[in-house]
Image (tube, rainbow, N blue to C red; front, side, top):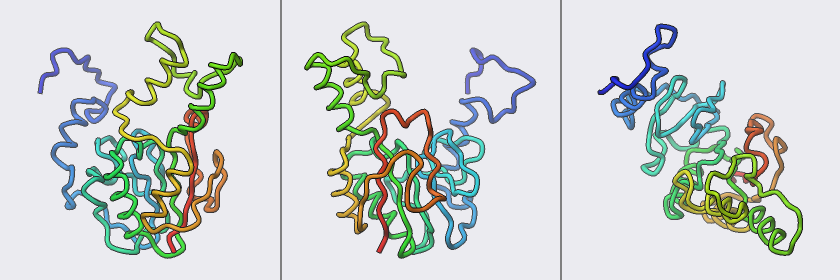
Length: 223
């Protein structure tokens, strides 16, 4: 692995370097021997990225310090049936093609206990659409992801819409009705639109404030 362009600092741990993290991911991804024992009632933080939550089983494709399971969720969750007490996922589902998202949610249903809640947080397509139409009608508005900046040099609402659809490897976007339908198809009941850090299960209210400006929060229960 080439570190010739990497600035090495004695104050940094080896695992702080992205190249080292990539290499560890290649070694441990999908290898159950590296996973912790998951106790009954555990909560999952799926697609966590850098947002490692204490007291959760943190799952992501890319390895980083603090991650519990490095795996590809498109291949299923490496957990037994009916063991999980709750599932949280923030800005992960939109990175999956719709068929993969449906399969992932069905697998969440499989591993969850009856009565457990799932909390899905995704970019809100309706929020973007309403802001775009308001701009066309001459209203003074800010796009939901205004804070992320516009480096394109073109009209900001159009640039922000394009960033939503083509930025960061996004594959499919949801409004409430669509996400509720997909959750229902996976076997969940009572999908409900929630708000930032408001919901049925207090343990699942770990939403990232930075993402609140553009997010749709939906909870559903595993019957």
